[in-house]
Image (cartoon, rainbow, N blue to C red; front, top):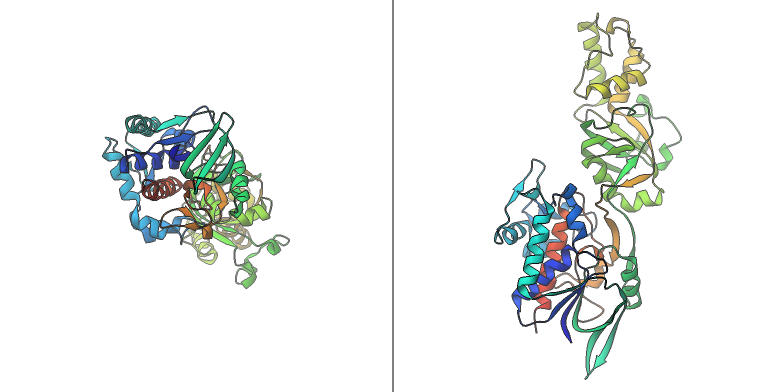
Length: 425
């Protein structure tokens, strides 16, 4: 008989196992992992550096980074937050550093540091890890008047007093949980980049600039937005985001885009990832202010060509493409440019529209919105409200976050809180 059986050899599963074993060394703890290796997501996170957490230590601010789970995580974060994560690793000799954007990494810049820490702790604490053990069935059975868990893997059947599901986005496990009576919110991708084919961003991959991005309502798609329409109520975007925007070979990425993909996960799925975005490359400026600025430059730089005079703070190659998109020829001087052409250029700089046609996974960091319904979990213990001694941690729950270490913090916090209850006799 196993005291605590953990299904899933990822971040949440390992973190929970370590804390259960530390809280109660007498327990027999087993981790079942379906693959040939454990902690695979930890390995690829942050480009192989492992974005452990984020330097946001106020629970009330931290929850704002979770499109799903914001309300539910407030209590758990008050119990176990980013500072506790930092303390956990530093007490094991792993120093973390804070980057300019708040992301936190091991100073070694290698995810292997985190993996080695977990593997070392599991070995020290006597937790058993069984690989190639894909689970094919979960059921609650009665033995000697008590309910215990029967878990069937492809290799054998295990019996456990308490069960923790930490399998991440696993459709087969979700199906088993549905059979046990849990409601599963259908999964959709949450962190992804936008596919865009457009001459204005063609040939300039690698350019990054701060921008404001809006997702437009479907009814706006049919007509071209002009300057005259700027005050119309119907123009209110469905979603808005700002931050660094990265132009790629296939379209757009970067924090501004990834935030939209997380907050709009359900909506953009319903759109079948075909929609329009509007970009203000100069988010501190309104279109009228930009037009006034360009008219001033027309007087000051009369003898120079528009193309070669980067009048505003955008990358030069982007400026060149936007000038061309405004119908301004390469040899046209500021003295000869018309007000109508400058209006078009102002429009490109502050209300630049693109058609999105599809998505790509953000690097290897596949995150989904969806999972076990939040109302069916007690967030003081992470125990199921439907079955006693059934617990959840990590992304198997309908919780996800924007990029920046927040998804891992969800894994650490839920794993830790579940562990406190799992460790009780």
